[in-house]
Image 1 (tube, rainbow over the protein chains, first blue to last red):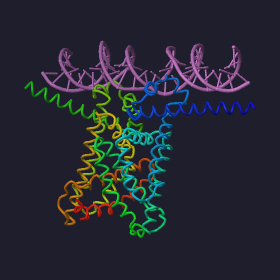
Image 2 (cartoon, helix red, strand yellow):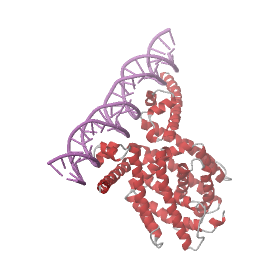
Image 3 (cartoon, chains in turn blue, purple, orange, yellow):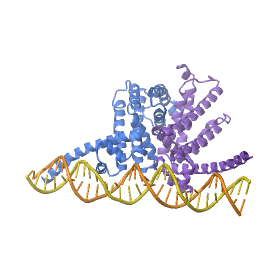
Length: 216
Length: 216
DNA sequence: ACCATTTTTGGACGATTGTCCAGTTTTTCT
DNA sequence: AGAAAAACTGGACAATCGTCCAAAAATGGT
């Protein structure tokens, strides 16, 4: 009985604590997206969250801990949306859906994706950030790879791709255009979407062509 | 006479001061490349340069001033090398020379180029950094554009390109692969070079093909 | 040798940072 | 209601930051 009681209690408080944790992560993400990694402080986050400074250390062991949680939060949100829109959906009109997701990312979640590149750069310096960033990038790679497989299967081409470089190339192209849009064309995301709309089909035709396989 | 004397004196001291300025910029670049923008302090730079803290404020109005000078220094070095190797050289074997430059950048100047992406991200937050970063990127765009023109001219195709999207696409592809190499494959630059060696000719054939022009 | 200028020093300054904790309040269960 | 656990507060702390300055040292022209 004692066990059961303490379990239920700790379980309830756990869910409440998790909710608050999630709230703090959300607010921390807002602050980070606005000011950037180098210029955000725990006091900023606490003030913006309407809690005292000590709370942050009550829910997170350290500043680094909180930032790692922010990275994971970004991963969950963006990757889930992409996977649902591309993998768990019919192939019909996949390109339009992809462009819609990217457009929305550039318009509404611009600050968050700016933060994503900030995290990637920080991961080049801080080993603590490396794993989190690598995991997200790995899942983005997987997503592109599976999408390419679906397209190959539909086209009746080779069913499986082994060790060819289509995925990193596609990723670099999309990521590079995305980065550029955040840098120069923050107010004009349509230009980037147009570019992608124009370049992706050509790039795919190139990468799906059989010459890409016979090369090796 | 008086004018002449003061001129020569100020001119001499100017050159000496410029030399020391350049030295401090060089040392600051080393520190920044090692620790990153968010974690470097003026005391770090002063210690590493073997001078006292006040010196930095004697040669640079503020920390921001020094960092802007570091950005300009990067620009001068890397862009000059690229322009000399690509524009002021015969077309013969241009691809091999480009790959050699990129390989060396990934092997020897890895830390400096990591800093370059750090600066670009900071420019997303700090307006003061934006112009410096934009200027470098603009010159890189110009370089790619002029190189494309040379290739087009050699191929006997349309002599002039107007408002097509070849440049940003090429830039994004190269830049994205470069970024990825700095993130994941810091010890294996050959993989990135191989990818570029494989992708660039295809991409160029795609962008130089006449269908790219008839589109519009 | 002397003086004016430039260069350099070492430290003080106020502000800000992440971390931590002794208490207080609130919640939760018997 | 009362006790135990969780949640929260406000501030202290040592460290570090960019900035600034008075004074010493070095420099160079006359």
